[in-house]
Image (cartoon, rainbow, N blue to C red; front, side):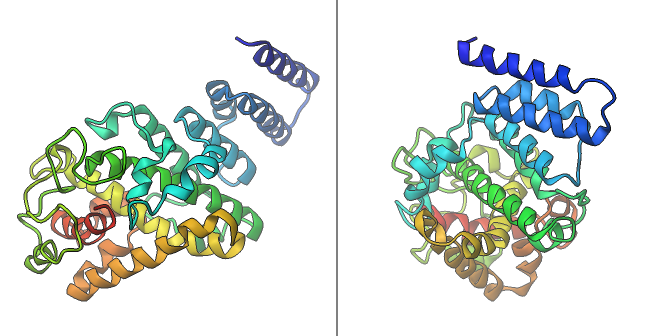
Length: 326
């Protein structure tokens, strides 16, 4: 342990001892948040997580939730500072959104299966803590408007901003692995053999035809799937839903984040909503029955809604992901 880490740990111990007697639960939580932030300042992720989790989940305390989310994101290797310094400018190169797969913060240590990768799991935990902030039920779509019912305008805005950046990085992880991109973000250029995200042999015929329009890069066949999203693979629907829910939530959150922050480096992602909305219109234009899939925000609902199935989900991937990563 470095001198800096020892110093911060000693300071935390002093703070905890100073307030150890006769504290209310509210004060204990405040002290825990302060101590956790000191840990996080030196990227001591696990002690921060342990301390906050020992308080029990404080589902209506915005500062607690943001700090706990930061702890899990820290353990995942995510850093907002690195995201803005190194990644955000890469988003649209190659266009439309292939650059998201080249984010340094979107690296994974295990690519098969992606859901076993510790950084992917930890970042998803960080996202879910804020996505369902306020105690939103897993069966309720956790929209920005739903979170606004539980927090002040500024608190909800801070939560949405932190969420948006983490979800962009998580989507980058997912697209990198399933599209088998190379270091330049080109689909099908990695070490795998697939040129598409998933298998489209059972997809809606009109959507299958979309693969031949020239909008999907190297994915022009219906069965060159990543093995993790192939037909008949265990948890295929769950995995397809993970990408669908991430992208839908990004579309739900980004407009308000951009409107609030505006300018600067956020200009690099302002086109994301335009790109995604165009694909959403294209999918719903093919068949309005795809609307539930194009709007679902809850992983639980995505996996269990009778109006959403592997056919509509693979159609979503054909129109959205295949054309966003080429």
